[in-house]
Length: 376
Image (cartoon, rainbow, N blue to C red):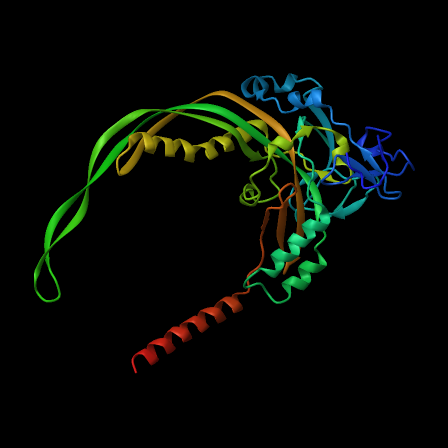
């Protein structure tokens, strides 16, 4: 592995709270884009050894139904106890670095005090997608996004710049695989042309054609196979924004290791395994409907009933990297998120309606002038 002249050694400890530099004993943080921990003091790189033999097990699909039925009896190899701090404003539950007594919530920007940590047992993530994008590059993407905002209030860029520090958070995700067989009933529509007569502006009789549809009953069965349907386990950010960060390259997953978390926060899932699959089923519906329509054929299709049978359901619990910035504008929270692997961005912002109205007035004025001069 290339190290740019820096020392590369193994970290002294595997505990997230006690990962120390091999050279000077200082605390280490994970360096995005590498497989190493970096010392903030001496600059040494401490390589994270990835157990290739554990990789196959890390990305192995887990049987959904058997896990759901026996979730209370899962062993320590599948469950873990986590200590989290909950934000009273947005409800996000994240881990904090040791000795931190107060901070701002990464998801909404509200102040939170670490008076007492809560503990919970969760299904252990088996794999993690390490940060690839550095904070500096994320900040550059954030500034580019701000510059490209149309109709933003004049003081937004100044306010957002003051709050532009990005926080790196690993978000919990479920991925689901499933096989579906769907029995449906519906109707097939075949279009045909019908002639009709009309008079043109000179009074001449012309023949035109209009489209009509002949409907017939349809029924059948369609088969679908789904692989890695993503469902975010977080309730702290709008799902539409997080869906907009896709795709994720799961070929770069590595076995879960606390060393990759050093210097970052981790949110625990608020969407459990069962609810997550219900969301996955909703995401599967569009493909199922499309398959049904293709099976019905014709020019138009109606789906009256469908009965979906699910089999071979499996899942993975993984952690995915996201850079987050939260800022307030006139007492409202706005968020900006970046895919920590690909750099894909999603964000929300306030709109200056004065600018919108001014643009509409300008367009109306231009159109009016066009008609005035065209009539002369």
